[in-house]
Image (cartoon, rainbow, N blue to C red; front, side, top):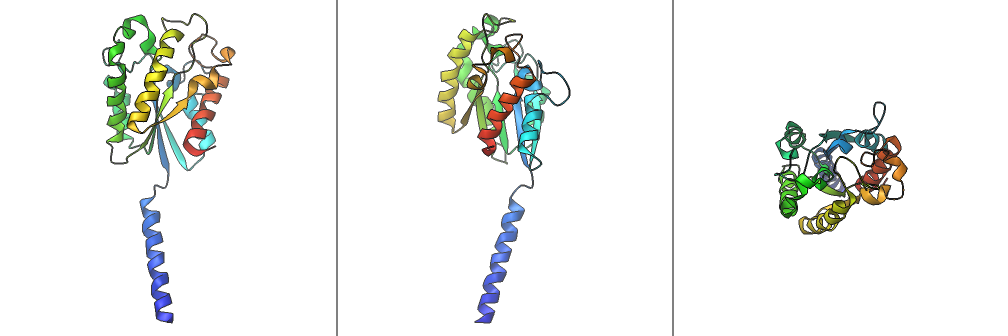
Length: 216
């Protein structure tokens, strides 16, 4: 009987060791996006929303900022994100979690004329991460609001057209949605240039992402 108990305990210990070996020591989070992800609009080191997200998630996570200013989701946009080295860097990061927030620059008139491609291009981007060997959990974000008349050609009218499309493709592809729009909808003062969140706005975005990723 003792030998049986000893054998069972040994098997359980082995299974626990295998399980521990399979689990990543650190969960890697890739933040994909444009200037809002990169940190334009914030002041001081470590104030971009991915940096503040890192602080909220703690040392069991490693957050990578792969934002590139001015980039579009649309492949026919003026500056497509998928043509950037940072996109390849995000793939090679081998993330366990991906947070995609693109679409703001796509609202510009010269880009939105290709709106018919929005869903297909977004799906291609999501699938490129879902195909990774790490099988990451992908979150797609509703873009932040654009107060008033907007700026740089960026406008709220087209953001509102993007949101239901993002929700629909998320459902189709098994992604979760982070509502960055709601996070800042009642805080236009946190978007002083009517596009880019300031430090406080980035903090609200980080809170929304942290809650979605880790329930924090």
